Length: 430
Image (cartoon, rainbow, N blue to C red; front, side, top):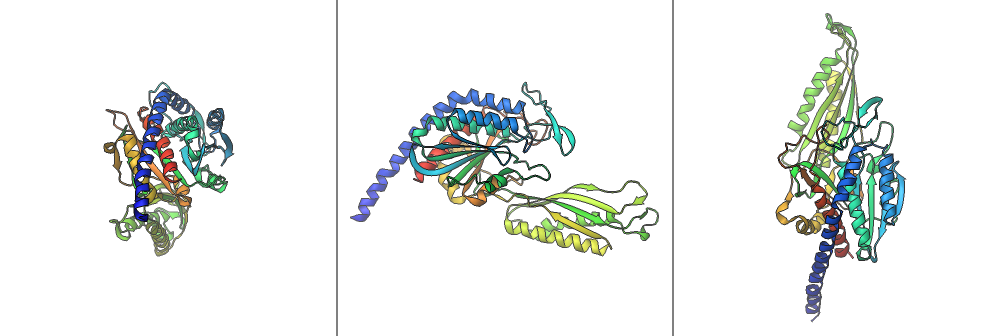
């Protein structure tokens, strides 16, 4: 009798949840369509007025003014220039965080868009053009749209929403803290405590209207490294009188390539070790005393990441010693793996399929790019998605390039997805 009773309750409750979701979906879809032109207008404003990491002053003011107009509790100057809006629903339930990154890049725009950026700023002591060359302008506009829709539906919210507009995803300036890690340190996931977090990234190689996802590692960890090789200066005609740091550096670079090819279990996950900078010497016939190199380490498995660190340190030390040189390796902290909680991913997959259509929600390969959304996911369950933004008939120029463009029609699906994920999570976790 007890089993029958609870089975009956389940059969009654499940359709009720689906009916509630369906009703919410209709409201969200209608409001998102009505708001689409405004979302595009916001995006164009931010695209035309980009700001670099930890310098997003005007961007933050525009966001904060919008959230205050909606009647939210608003926190500013979080992690320097971050903005957080808190929306308390009409019913009890979990706290959901939604995150958008707000910084631009030191890239000079080369598109012919009528709202292209002509902003000039300073980066690492150099005058540079500034551009939203990774789509963060779309992320801001999408989340502002979601904030307006969920505020309109405030009485229907079963819980609290934190809208996190995060600065410095591309990395804080040298000598400064910033980004997701600093926001967490300053308590962005507390008061009230966040139960789950959702984020997305526009993607210029995936058609508009498509959502891509992956459980577990979806983006790699990233660590930059710096390597200084010290030798002994000599005339180029008598190399035996010195210790050649150039030859040593070349051997280190070649030997480091064996880390991935010979030490990584590549059937398990991908890994990358790349050198991007090598500097030293002033004249063709002088063997210099010092060479400086920089590079990047990427991994989709934490054990593999640690093994790369260990092997690189060993190779640097022993290769330098074998040449009579010395070498100092510094591996920076970087970002952890962007790890989608498997249970949360599975729970929210039906929501994504309902919003976009099951044929437009695709399991993707992992990406060896990195994201500091990963710091949030170290603390709480998180789901990070890729939103297709490829303009039809256009060959993608790629992110972080002067010719980066996206299809603005893609943002409508982003607004609908983020709003619906919030409501569905709330009602299924009351």
